[in-house]
Image 1 (cartoon, rainbow, N blue to C red):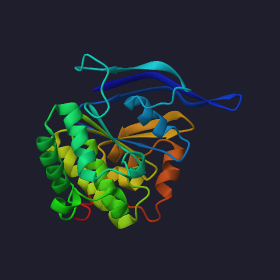
Image 2: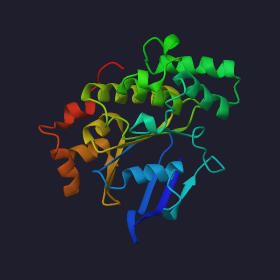
Image 3: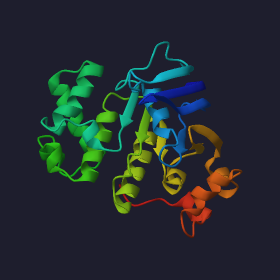
Image 4: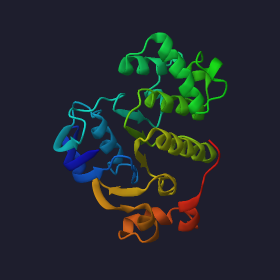
Amino acid sequence: MASIRDLTVTYRRGGDAVAALSNISLDIVAGERLAVIGESGSGKSTLALAIAGLLPASSAVGGRIEWSGLGRIPLLGRDIGFVFQDPSASLDPVMTIGKQIAEVARTHLGLTWSQADARAKTLLERVRLPDPDSAVHAFPHQLSGGQTQRVAIAAAIAAGPKLLIADEATSALDTIVQAQIVALIRQLVAEDGMTLLFISHDIALAAELAERIAVFRHGQLVERGTTAGIVDAPTQAYTRTLLDAHIGLDSAPLLNRAGPAV
């Protein structure tokens, strides 16, 4: 799917250059669920933005990202679906949620408005939003945080992307809703055959969802491996610290929790 080689991203902060990522090399395999974890400032969200082509113009980027089988630069919305931590970053407060989802489908799939509206309703049903017939006419401020994040997920998959990036998509939600959103993402990824890049500071959520985990610290990739390997036998002290942050963490139930119904 994507081969990242020697990726370096630097931001200007005042008169100083701050390296957010330093020589990152990482493969994202088609069809896999990969989690990138680390504390705030570790560079994991910068990686997501770089992959999606959303870095600010003021950033300086080195290295390369190669996309196999695509033959062109991927299009955000069509090839890559992006779910932000805060749905307000991607939802228009003055447009109904149905139209916002339909607009993505119409733009990238060439549907008529009638077809796109029907697809929007279907997607709201898929993300388990209550009463989709009425919800298509609602505005974002009329929904709860968990509901707006479901809408954002529906918009992200509206054009059938091959890669879904969820950047801290659950961190603003309470623990019960977090688990529901993780279960929903897992289900949608499996049903649509998408590749998933899950960005999180929470190693427990990452372990529930991902097959592989990459650990970032201070803009560097410090450890990577299968989820079971990272949870059961981490090689880096920093990874062990992330695991220890979950009091009484037991890897067996951590790796086998089904999560609540979506």
